Length: 256
Image (cartoon, rainbow, N blue to C red; front, top):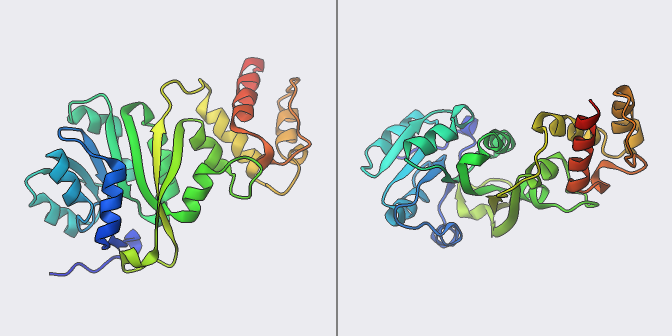
């Protein structure tokens, strides 16, 4: 029975064999490696992955698709909302300290998934995701560009990232209205040790009115906390490199 894509789940199924092969080459799965696929759908990517790995854990919210996937002898199926999945527990169940994570992420919740995974980065070896191209552009953006954003800062703090593959709309069924891309995310072995909650708050305040000089946003936030350190607020949020946001968090933490 043909599965009808469900709009509420943001389902767009990969159907281009050439693109699927290219994605698998970028992931480079090796026999016996532990891997988790988010949103396997109709198993277009799942099948070539599991053929190379031997076994694969998949996370699928759609109960009809999950039921189909359970019939595959090499798959461990977690029927759940990915935002409720403990990836450290998944790695432990696979018998490894760190697992690899891949997936064609639902575009309507891709950013929440990326932030959810930040909480389990110590249990993840690497991540390869298909995302809306404009989201990937923001993830890998450099300072002083229009794409540089809160997402850029929060992810670049923890990952080395690169846009590895462009994917046009016609590679999917049904075709989305946007271009897509595959991003590779490799956690830094020794990221800067900072208070993640404080970093998130500072970056959120900074980018809350990105067209304004920071004096009007982050400057006022710092004044309210009687911050006596040095930080140039006569620039916009997009002009501040990641390492300077990290340094500010460290300084604010030390002053509290």
